[in-house]
Image 1 (cartoon, one colour):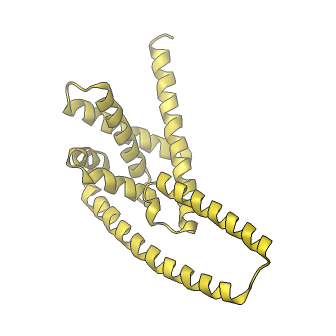
Image 2: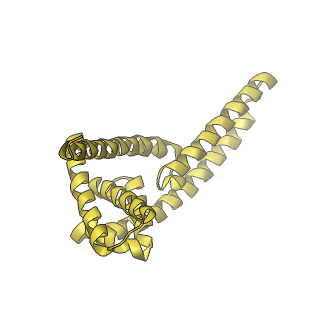
Amino acid sequence: MRSPSSLKQDFLKKWVMGLQFCGASKEQMGIFERKKAIKLSADVAMASARNARTSWSRALIANASKDSENKALVDQILGTDSEKIIKKASVSSLNAHKKIVLRSKKILKETRRSRRIKKMEPQMAMATSVAKRLVKKRTQVLKRLIPGGESMDEFSLIEETLDYIASLRAQVDVMRHLVNASEVLNGK
């Protein structure tokens, strides 16, 4: 894994490039358009800084490049390899779905087998059932929060979540430093 400082530097460079592109492409932007442009360029810059090596980064790039308005921004941030990365992102989301289907069938088979093997006491069975429902519910929430998480199995989801959190922290650090620098420049 890359050092946090090089990830932050790469993100900042690509994010500023995306912001400049958004600012140059539209002369008059409302507050909501600006917010959308900042978020989109930050997301694509972070995914690009990860070099589309993770599922969440490929999902962000694929989702952003679906919209024709965002395609130019994605191409600008990704640079010369944009077509290759976008294609890789689209193909990997299809492959991930196939893996999930196969994994689900395997889990279902194992579950049926384990139910036949042992019968539990009613209290223990009820506690196990409640715990499984809680885990399942929380896993579904996590899958919705992580870009591309819907097509991940539980093990990949945990790994991708940790990487996504580290990337978001780097993004927040860069943005915080940028705000602090602008306050110093403005004399506050």
